[in-house]
Image 1: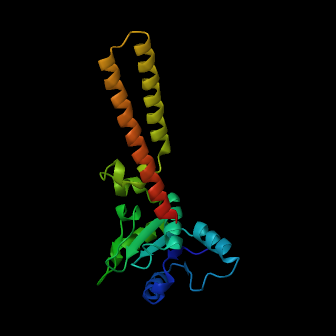
Image 2 (image 1 turned 90 degrees about the vertical axis):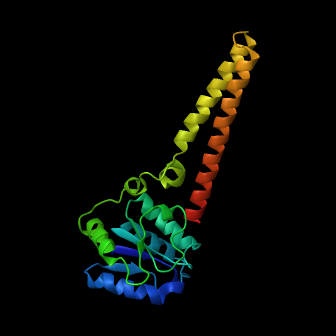
Image 3 (image 1 turned 60 degrees about the horizontal axis):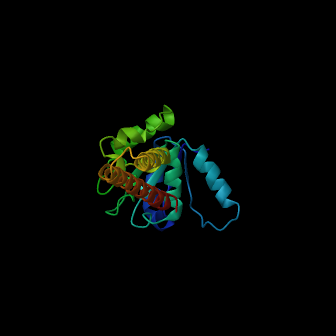
Length: 210
């Protein structure tokens, strides 16, 4: 398997080739798709190369922002903690990848930091921790939060327990109507927040995985 799997749009092949050649000149072995994806066996080969690579380099352009293949490959690499990214034009990376470090290759390019990161991942076996890159961005801006259904489930369970307890207390005359209304309002707020988190997670997964 190659050291680096390059994920890109075939519409950008001419622009990606110099990048591949530079990586090869640095001693990295590179796998990149240069063929039309029509062979029925191709998905299996691509999956094997993607999983077997030590690092995945996503090349973001206007052509790849809505490309299902590239987004899905980047999402899998992110889960495997081996995703590195660069941009070639003003389009940048789509959500949620735009919250991660993206080397800017417009103009002269940020080759130094990217090459150093590739060396750490490929040659030293360092895993990329998204939490470090995303620290301080807030829970609604991070893929980690978008992929945390347990938190929403726990909040919904707590809201349901509060609702059940409040209803029992009200039926037994232990809670006045005014207090019951406050509790029910709080439960409704929690339910709305959980629904919004679930919607955000589904939207993020849909955009990342096609």
